[in-house]
Image 1 (cartoon, rainbow, N blue to C red):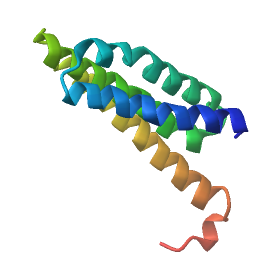
Image 2: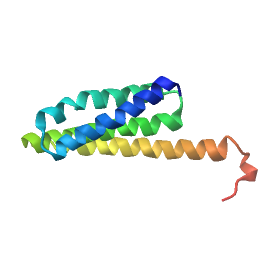
Image 3: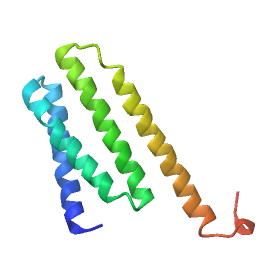
Image 4: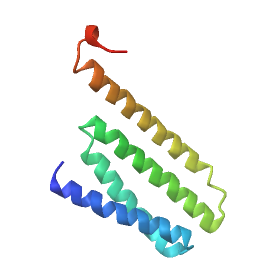
Amino acid sequence: MSKNIRLIENLHVPLWLIKDTCWMLQWKIVGISFIAPTLGFAIFIAWEARKRKLVFYPSLAIVFWIMANSIWMIDEFFELGIRHFSLYSFIVGFVCVFFYGFEFIKQRYFQSKSLDSLDF
């Protein structure tokens, strides 16, 4: 990965922490205003990782985690009754983690070794 992606990843973490801290402190306007940059950075990171599956799937899971987290935060702030929608984003995030595991096993055991030499 390039140095620019590393910088964006390093900036993304404080944005996420600020958003969640504002949620905990019930600072509604600031918390909600940090959704877009936090989610935007996560989407950008996933987009840049799209050609490397072992980096892409966890990055995409983070996008869906932040989406779920943001829906939950908005529901807690305004009692809109939409918290259950965050479950869908969490599920998609878990599916991304499943694909990561599948890709990891595939690359580790089926692309680097012959089938005859596998140790099960």
